[in-house]
Length: 209
Image 1 (cartoon, rainbow, N blue to C red):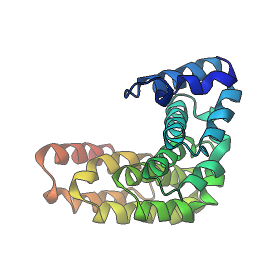
Image 2 (image 1 turned 60 degrees about the vertical axis):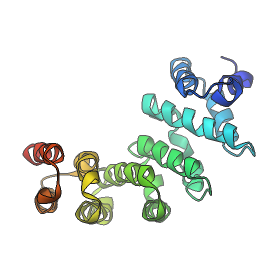
Image 3 (image 1 turned 135 degrees about the horizontal axis):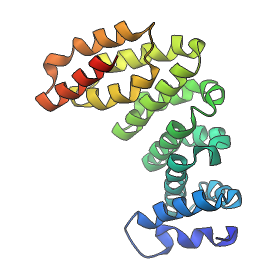
């Protein structure tokens, strides 16, 4: 695929409501390692056409799921998008950050205040992906852990019961010998609030710690 026709493959230019073309484009870029096309998509994030910008962020985070290294250098771009007035752009940016934080933790940590602010004011999807970012930061460095893991614990202690299983699963990568007991204690205190399926998921997590 040539760099100059990457936009021809976006959903908004294909007359369809399905997200599949965006996923297919991400897969194609992953296979071809076309970094020039990635740069074009990054530039497309600033398009005045909301549909183009939205498709670009979709392709980028889908690419991040497959080949996070291809978007890992764009931490500042995704952080900037956390201030967007478009919820789609914010949760797309946070989803991208969740894919690349493990590759570039120091750059994300340096901008942690903006990530935390987006988490605190964000939608459900934004908060979901934020937990993954926090967990990746926490496991990357003990200095980061001292700041980020308490945020994770507070979240698990106060979030809606239905969020606990998924968010605990996302946070599990940050659990180690030094913080495991605090993690388990927070979850055990909330077990009575969970439905049977939710409780089984959390109990499985507790058994693995």
